Image (cartoon, rainbow, N blue to C red; front, side, top):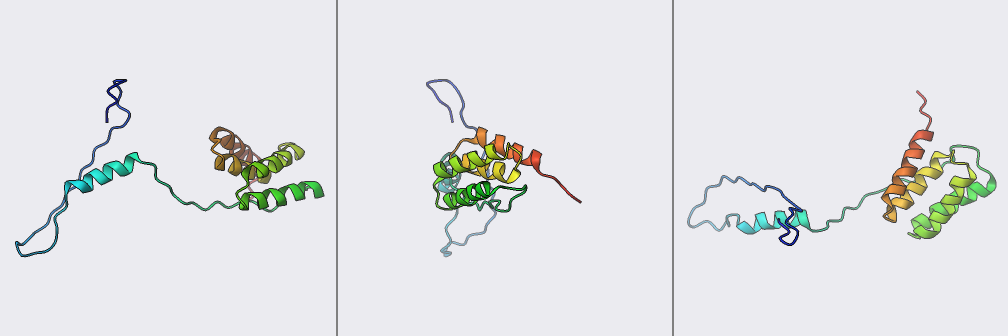
Length: 137
């Protein structure tokens, strides 16, 4: 695909398909058409949605105060209701309140940031969460 205005190639791919078939003149099976290749090409260009399931962390990893426990519980409830702005406020307060030492708070805030499309911030909180996790063998 070429953008003739800018003289750039925003997308390039090869589509190849091999089919070996035998077909009799009285057979009702249709042979593949050029439309199948076109559909495969269009599929690569158009937005496609994939449903994924995210596991939220709901068990405190450090000693939370009663206020911090409430922030976590309510933040998770808002996420379940898809009220990401409110969840973001509560979980941001939790991250601050725990002085950036709770991987649970950081991870859940990363999920909210990702759901809102703020991938740079989400990555920041996922990275913090990963750094805070203690692996025991």
